[in-house]
Image 1 (cartoon, one colour):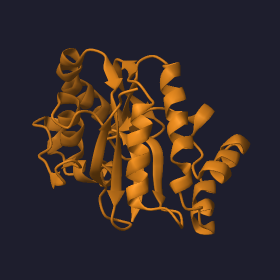
Image 2 (cartoon, helix red, strand yellow):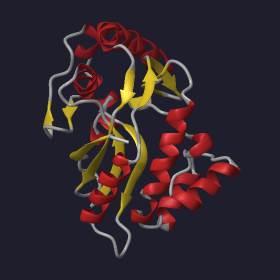
Image 3 (cartoon, one colour):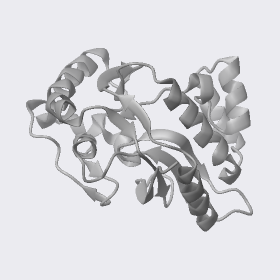
Length: 230
């Protein structure tokens, strides 16, 4: 069993419906959903293009997936989440836009948000005691992607290289794509997202969510969403 601390939008809201439909999976209802009605989603490759993020559900990572450390329990994790949200207020992100992060596509803030980086760092620290140490195989796999010295220090200290100065808020919408496919898919996603964005206004982190994965290879599901109230 693995857990993760994510940002997820209101599961009844348009942003969640958009992201879940792009991935073909709703982690809140734990069910597959139809892809959007758009020519780009009629291509045979769509299921493969979205296969990797579909396994995790629509989200932005705050504390990456981890197995529970010895001596801690799921109930303690949930209790810590309930305390954390009482101590932290909503974080205004503003407008999100479709962008490429390396070879994959995601929703990212249109402008930098310092408060968001601080909030994410607080999540990393608050939940780290629940994280089992990386295995040597997990560490070796992470090192294969070519990390900077600072990212290696983050990996060894926090179990994940992209935290604090290296954190970038993103809500993944595709797996890695070749450049031509990425450009075409990005254009389709922007077309689909435009009316959603117009109705959203400014996006806020108003909750954190605990997701779980019963075993490697299975899809993550929503355990509980906790509204921020600090």
